[in-house]
Length: 310
Image (cartoon, rainbow, N blue to C red):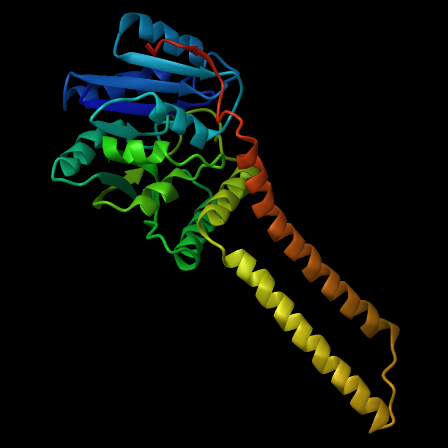
């Protein structure tokens, strides 16, 4: 069993592969010469895989997994976890926003007896105000509506013990939210603070659409609050409707004033219809995830790899 494996998910990172490899190798070698760099290519459309394969021919400590198509960042990390047997595992993105030079600090904290040591961001350079605001709101919302102690201002950059890896392998859900799963596991956790750099090259792999999907995966995986919201809305509207009916009867029989009006009828119908559609949508998100898990399809399909599975 190796001392350390570094899992690096990649998607269209051909411009920085060489720098990424150099910095990772230098950083991890300062800890132990017995390490593996495991690159997981998530269906890149550029020459990312070819560059990784070239490096692997020169350095036997470099392993790679290439998917048949793009399956997503969290699935790429999960594939790396499925194929590592080291005592400790580092997860780091391949865009060099998270500095590889922080790995020795994470490892030193891990050596103190913590099973999970995550990197907490003090600053996030190069991010738009919209992304910073939505990320801040999302993680604080998650902390309020879930029972897990989800650390704030952190991503997937962390070091975890092999026992954490084994536990994650026992979680079969298709819609992965790894930082939530690791927080849910518990164990002894600590953090190291750092300043996140701006992206070196290329475009982000998380546009708005993927950010929304990622947020939905996290909320539906660890909270039933949206379902309770649907229930509470149903109770509230039922009570409101009952009170309106009582008022209409009182106005007609006691005050001798019959309530009329096309506008009020349409507004009330649109309000109730909107709430119904919202409720169906929320319930549908949960049913969709159940449906995906029931299919039991493979989480990912490996196209190429230099990992010996024997």
